[in-house]
Figure (cartoon, helix red, strand yellow):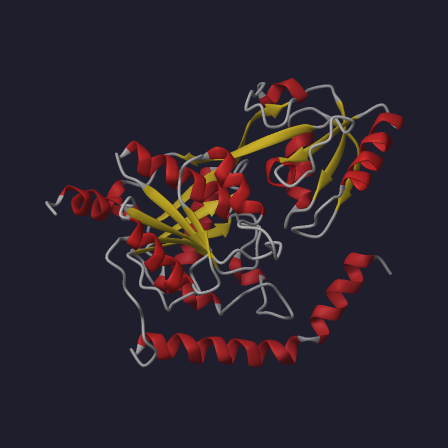
Length: 345
């Protein structure tokens, strides 16, 4: 039996536990909805970027896009996250390191107690808006906008609740969203996207729920990691590549590379947040050379690769791009930050 089939069989056997998990999640949400569990508010606007499933919807590209948008509005954003997968001696996890590379100087705090982290950002005095990464289920911290990402290619109706599936709560939790962004919408036509909007609004029981579409668009290829110099994504066309990834959706990375016209010779996909030491990376680079290919990885993986001149590799950078209209400042909650920043102290 193939590994993927074995995982599916195991997950199906866990469906009774999913009822328990869903019940606990529903009870917890009900306590917050009724004001029984306390919600903490800080003096800065908080914009949450989250989802209903475990990983793979593109939260980091959305957070990066929001940072750019906030700065374009003249605001000073900061990013707050739990820091899942962070090494015990590290300040930031993979996603945080990637954001630091793309947005040097933007404050970041990773703390399992996100209320304490938000309060620390408020005390800094140089932050206008807090972007809460992966915060939809973290309801202890009051947020001004909940942006929820949904994979356009995987309808919520096809998901099951943990541990039999990858839903963190029942799909009806979508009703709490202020804005839904359907990510990975590349290649879907207008009628398919409209059909998905109808389905999501039905799940949320909200005909007025704003739903936009976006794609994960290749930004460029870095041949000297850390240099910041990007060649156009079309530069991969016709090249033989050996892929290395440790992300939630490795198949999506491979499909993107193939769409760019590269020939994928082999793909070593590791569990999310996997770390390579120098010896392992050198062995992968040697294997790629034996196959007459170039080692290619994701930007998220590259930030945790050890510095090694004897392990040459390419890095594919991905960004978020909206299809059609972008969300406005009010939908994003940035208008609240702009007004607050303009108030006399």
